Length: 378
Ligand code: ADP
Image (cartoon, rainbow, N blue to C red; front, side, top):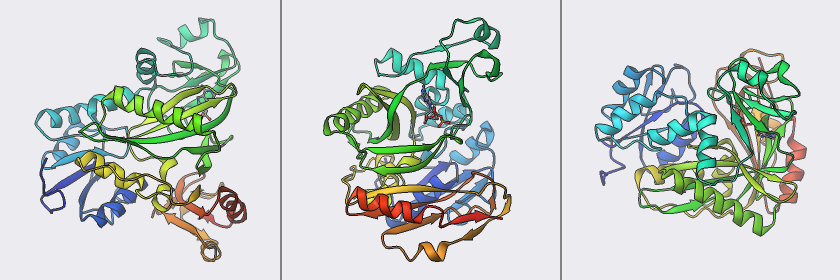
């Protein structure tokens, strides 16, 4: 790859211009990297800060080709992109990381589960059904979890089924309902040389109503053995995918101490936002290092941390107004990140807050104190 990765001529193309892209640009700026963004929303969080911003659909073959053809390197901050176009660009000699082949496996939760099974990666048992008819006639152990195979995100497209009556029309992945103790996540990076680096574990607490990460903290409250095992599994997954880039591996820790991979995302992830303030290298810096082919950074935690998503208040849709930010800024070690989204909607991710501290106890105390201080209304 071009040695002059920090020159203007080295154009890094990113598919997706949301908050992940925005934080990637913030990090890229330190190394004078030039990030060019493609996103269908002209007001996307990256629109005002990218080196160049192209407004076009990510799922359109021609739009992706047109955007990608003059780039030195292409990466993504979202999975729902036109993979055929990325394959064409890759064949023409442009490095695409994560590789389109990996995006293809991950994009469909059905093929993702098949991949785990085939490669002996521990995961909950599952069955894929051809159509709804087959599902209704199947002998399923209820309660079970039904998932949309494609297009679901933030828990939309996941539901617990008590019986077949409330199943989705077009979702035919059924998983065993895991009675988990904790949900944890490990972010792992791999570069072209096969060098691998894992971030410290993160523990997620989900909002039961929205299936959205409400609060997460790092390090997870798990034993050193479990942490080690989780890191080995995450490294095994990225190796078996033969993937270059960053991969978030979401896992369940079951009550019997087993670790099961739930799902993976081949990009920076919500469960890694705290790494900006808490680790020696952030997930965004690590993503850039891995795809460019630079040495991976030290991922050690400098301090404990928690992250709270700032979601649009229920009952408000329209131009976002932020209440309580001044109050929040009085707290020490608390870092708000606003994504610059003009319009708020109920439960829309509008930003996040990172809380840091010398110990997890201190972090949790501060998190409790600031919960609800900021409200996003219209
Ligand atoms: P999304 O891609 O929309 O984030 P996930 O597959 O991560 O969807 O599921 C969202 C949440 O639903 C998980 O974080 C977990 O809380 C719950 N969940 C998903 N699969 C299972 C399962 N097999 N057993 C129990 N809970 C599950």
